[in-house]
Amino acid sequence: MLLATLLGLAVLPLLNGWLVTPPPGAACCSVERWFSSEPLLRVASAVLHRVGISVAPRQVVVGRDGWLYLGDDQAVSLSTHRRAGQPSDIRMGTSYGEGARRWDAFLRSRGVKAFRILVAADKESVYPEHLPQWASPPAVPGVADTLLAHADADLFVDSRALLRRAAATAPSPLFYRHDTHWNTLGASHAFDALARSLRADLPDVVWPSAEERRLLGLRSRTGGDLADFLRLETWLTETEPVLAVSEKLGARVHRRYASGDQLDPARVADSRVALTFPIQTQHDRALNARRVLWLTDSFGRGMDDLMHRTFAEVVSLHWRDVHKDGGQLIRLIEEVRPEVVVVTVVERALTTPTFAGILQYPPGPDAGEAGGVSHTAELVEMSGVERHGEGFRATSGAASMIFRLPRPAAGVGGVSLHLVCADGAASLPVQLFWRGANEPRFHRDHSVRWLHVGDRSALDGLTTVDGRSAGEMAVLRLDLRGQGHCREFRLQELALRPSLSAVGRPQ
Image (cartoon, rainbow, N blue to C red; front, side, top):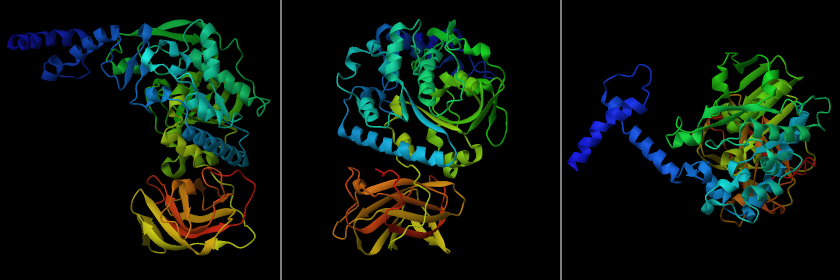
């Protein structure tokens, strides 16, 4: 054992000198430089990868023919693909459809002509044949199949089936073998589906032709994010498709929105760099002088060229950040005045709480004066909230306020909320629970969520999650989910009212 240890210590400097490139400015003779175990781990990973074994199975699964797939560390991706659809997926899909319709109505009231949600396929959905046999998807409809079947097909563009068909005849794979993402060829098929969906709403928009989406050739590239997890980023290589649209592109200028600071194009284009602020991109050879607000994750990077070729000004933001900064999305809608709003979300993120927080907290219709008798609730208890001057202050991230009605109410049509944030937050996700006088506790099935925009918001048609009428209400609980904003506020009124409008029912 001592001899083996000494031999290993003698070999480590040789491996570090041969396999590891030191970062600029690193000390030449440090212990970390010459006696790091990273080369040994890299060699072990390379050997095990050849026989189908991953050194990081929670992050990467080694498939057939050298293909790599994402493990369960990200959104429980692998296990979700192996699971059949359940009633909970039906309920989520239904709520997504209702939420998307409410967002569509809200955006159109703000001058937006078209709103779509493009679902980017996971690699497992397009190339399941390269998965290990034990990781094969079920023969029955899966989670995403079930969810999207109950969402709104007019607002959701599902790219999975068309990519599967395209993969059968494509001259090159539509996804990288060593990365989670689709490449530009795969993204071009999805962009074409998005364009077909938008044509009815945008009849005068000129879209890139089939010639511009033509494959010109392939260039070599090193492994992607999955290769990084296996420490093989420079050892694994594959090909990158080059499309004809790249020849049509002129100068693109990327700026940090609002500040105007110019950004490094390589950093903006890198799918491994998660930017946390809005980016404004202007293109001098765009086919249309239109403004687009693009809420996208890293899968949007593959269709950057086509998006910027189509629209002269694109403001992009990761969809996970829409509620940050006191309602960043609502501010952008008011400031950018986009004509089109597109959401690009990868399939595995559909069931995550972060994405659900967008569609399950849609804006209500503009609050109006409702006729009939209203039932104003009286504040009786608070948790994570304290009185502050003439208003209130949230003292924790789980702020809630409990109200009691003067008398139990049944058959309530709607709810209105008059709440003013002292920090000028543009929007605030809220959730209202209710229970009868004899019910011991609140339940999430007897609740409704919405995005409180501005100072007043309203909802119509209070129902339970399964669509039944709300029933008797005696006690209400209002949860505030400000994500660090709207810490101080004035609550002017929370009231139950007769029906306000015919806008869709929240779930």
